Image (cartoon, rainbow, N blue to C red):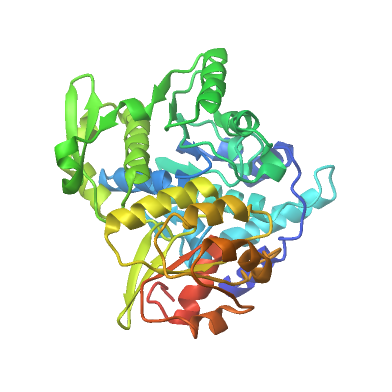
Length: 430
């Protein structure tokens, strides 16, 4: 059996393998591992351009709080690889990770000599999750897709409810150039006769979901119709979630700022109502679980050595727009922005949205990941939009140039990890 460190290296060794563009290999891998359709848990399958990580975290937390043995799957991780696969809200233990990955890799090698070929990194991680949740006896799994939905490796499951949090422009090289095309890929997780919960979607994307749900005879729930916030209550962080029996007050914790997180919470509650019925909304454990939900890298606020850091992995224009609203609502002083992006992302809309935030300027850096965006090119695009702009070719060098003001780090989840390590932020559980 591999050690944990060797297991991590072995998994990273799969990164260069190509995406198959289909589910047949993943289905074969699961069959051979003894977890057909992902195993016997009840899956709540979550897709979307933005908000899917927060929504998945809220679903997992509430189920754990209600006493269910619960799994969670997240993409990407922020500070620890094991964040991807969770059991009862905690990352999978290192021993279990290494032991089960050894098994996945063994079966993956068997597939290499077949028509399916080599398994990918994401297929291996997803299969590892299925094994871990089955071994732990999980009753429910909050399952976040990686990319898209229709051809995502997670889409071998038969869910009890499908969730689409939002539709926006992202990963257009894979998912399509229009919202209709992107929505079609996300709608691929909708299964015949299974309830569907959707967030606040653009009109053309909503039309895709409605047609898909009608074609497959699925009940479609519009989460945006289930909650509101009284004008007089805006400063009290209370929203009202509506059911046929009346409204339920839900307190919004401070670490879920901005309108988009209220929408994510409403989406999570609608998904659970479709599975559990209404009674869980009256259970105090539900409200307690909401307050202790933590979502790494989503408006994560850290104070270290007298300086305020705000870490948010927003990497498209829509997500940055929500980040800006949350920052303004927080009341923090104008920040200096540290931005790093992947080459596959689109910097124009991100920079335009960031420029709406009163700031002290921007510093562009590379991301320690494959195909990082060039920080000099990012700076050239940013310079007309910001009061000050500098580019650096290392995070460490950039951090030496920061004044004693709030620092907003954004553009890529992978960047958050690098900055947190370089700055010594207390976010790692070594």
